Length: 265
Image (cartoon, rainbow, N blue to C red):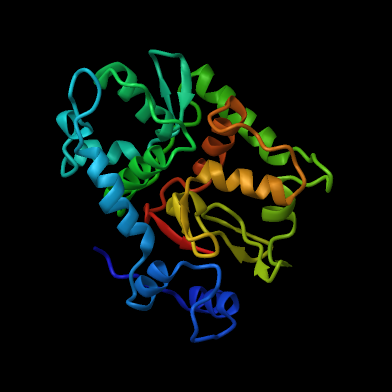
């Protein structure tokens, strides 16, 4: 298990979140608070104990596990994880890693796929990103017309203002970069800097464990949470709009090392 490493910016975020208190914050479960005090990311425990168990569990009529086909120590397999969302020829569309898990469940395990919002699907994807930590994000954005379409559509979703507050992802994470919202500094989501503010390479640390929710969420679930806070209608998980948005935002972090699950507010 990796010991949690916290940068000075992370320390400031945690001090703000917890009001420099030594008592357990109400937003965090007693079990997770105990782990946090020991310097352990509860998201990693979730990845190992829940996701790892599912990865090795035979399922469906074929009685196959993910491990029946994939060796978690195989470099070739691990390097593929950072390429999602990725074009799949068999369905002629770009799919997220969550959807790729569903496809394998239906095709190879012959079992009903876990829903995208289920703990099981989230756990499996978190485990995959966890074992891929240290490898690079490398999503394709232009190899064929379908990929180009998803990329451009994702950029459009990122930039389109909508909802009660007439906001977009771009308004907060580009135009307002360097300003504060709800006691947090707004930062770009990619590798580069905007308005002199360095980006967070956000896609590299999702799925992430949200300390204020005591739970691991995928990047698409985080998008939905942002949409709700912005007064927008939430896009459905796995929809073309959502996968396209995930592809575009992930592409902003191309070249960054995966370090998941992240530990976030």
